[in-house]
View 1: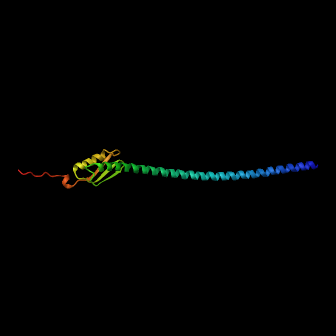
View 2: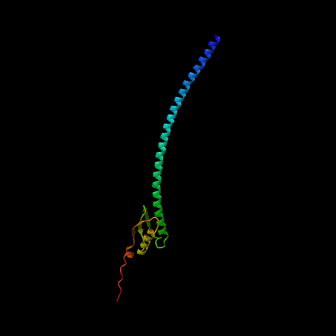
Length: 149
C-alpha cells in the first residue's frame, strides 16, 4: 500500500503543480493582454500625433511653396529691371502675389516706364502687371516749345 500512497502523492503533487502553474500562466497571459492593450492605446495616440504633425507640415510646406513662388516671380522681375540700362538707376519696388506684379517707384522717362512694364509682363510666371510707376512731370507731358516766326 505504501507504493500506491506514494504514487498517489506524486500524482497529486504533479496535478497541483500543473494546476497552479496553469493559474500562473493565465495570470501572466492576462497581464500580457493588459500590457498589450495599453501599448496599443499608446501606439494609437502616437499615430494620431504623427497624423496631426503630418497635416501641419503639409500646410506649412504649401504656404512656403506659395511664398517662395511669389518671391521667385518678384526676384525675376526685379532682376530684369535692375539689369536694364534704362532702369538700373531707378528706385523701383516689385511685389508679386499669385502671378500679379505691382511695380512702384520713379523712372526717368515715359519710354523707361513702358520698358519696365513690358519687361515685367514678359517675365515667366507673370500674368498681370499693375503699373504704379511715376515719371517726372517734365518728362511725362512735354509741352511743345513755341517756335518763333
